[in-house]
Length: 231
Length: 307
Image 1: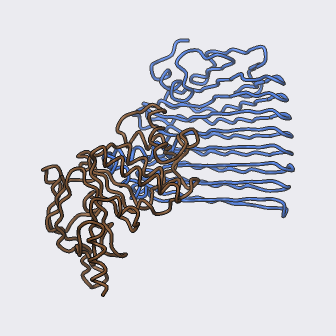
Image 2 (image 1 turned 90 degrees about the vertical axis):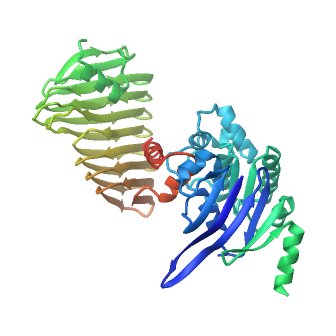
Image 3 (image 1 turned 180 degrees about the vertical axis):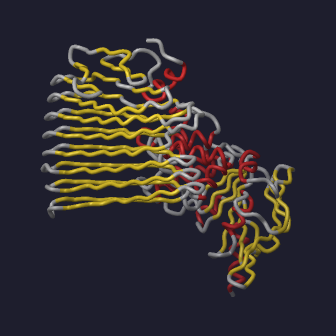
């Protein structure tokens, strides 16, 4: 469903050429659940943003559902069925949670319908639907609304960038059950994470270091490879 | 009432009037009153010595409305109108004003509206004022509103002031004086484009014990337009005052924000916030990941911001 062919991305850090992604080639099957992990600066978020179209690869090709989307815009990729949950949720003055869910869904939903997406992330619709997505909400609330907005897209491929960041333990449990349900629905998931609990429910783990894939496989296999590497 | 298509459009834009409204009203079209109705509790009278109205609202009047829209469809008309509102004790009413100018000529059309509100003890007034201009003439569409609000003990005023489209030049002056336990809430929404100029000047005096003011202005400046927001809150007693100016800048536009706080006693709690900037790229990106084009995303952000 998604194929990355020799993807590189980099800019200049001062005078030094800084390759953030270095010739990455990966395939993600339909309905698969993959976790991408690695240390800070390993290129995880950049890889996600290249797939979504926020960053443009300096070389390589991206194939999604047999279509070459390398030169497509963020909007076009979203319309093709790619959704992205931001690590840092974006705030909007004047835009309500209901507005955001409707934009995300692409159609005007009833309040009950929109409320269902909030319930999925553990928020009571009556308390949140008509609040603005702004700084009056806590970081955890914004994060849950961010996830709800992505769920409302009903996308084929959903990429979550550190969805666990800033949410409490209860919400974290909810999050893992959301991933399981999305997988059961046949959606393809790519989750950037550092959380072992998420590794354990994923089909496979990809380890990135220095913009390159250093390990790929089941949780145990990647853990073993990581252990060998540190010896 | 025989109204032109343009006059109907103005009434619709500034006061959501599609037919004769319920309650008291006065329609002013091209400098003349063309329709008026008083009610048992709301008496609208013509001023004797200058152009305008005296509007008397009886004590304990609840849930009634007054519509006093103004439309100018003649190029070159210049007018100053003085409307005074006397709102009796314990009343709770909504006043819908607003002015629109259609100008397809070469001369400027100008409306200077001076509204004064005398709000008695424990009365509450909601005042909605929209300004709008259209027409392809080179003559200016100029609106200069002055609003003065005098709140007695425990009285409340909520002002919704909106200018979204088509007004070439505006100088808005809003002044309020509050006694004990009085409260004023002001929400201003403003959008300028082309070479339009808009100045908003607020002076709020918190004279009474436990008086409260909350002033929030949101504006968008597009093209080469220019805006000035100047808000002064004076705390003369145990009081709370808050002013916030949020502006989105686009193209070559300019916004100047001058918030001022003047605390004359240590019991006064006064806060101001001002933020001016372009639309955040993260906002556009987020909406694009939800399937909107950059134009659609910008429009959603603007419409939400000005809501």
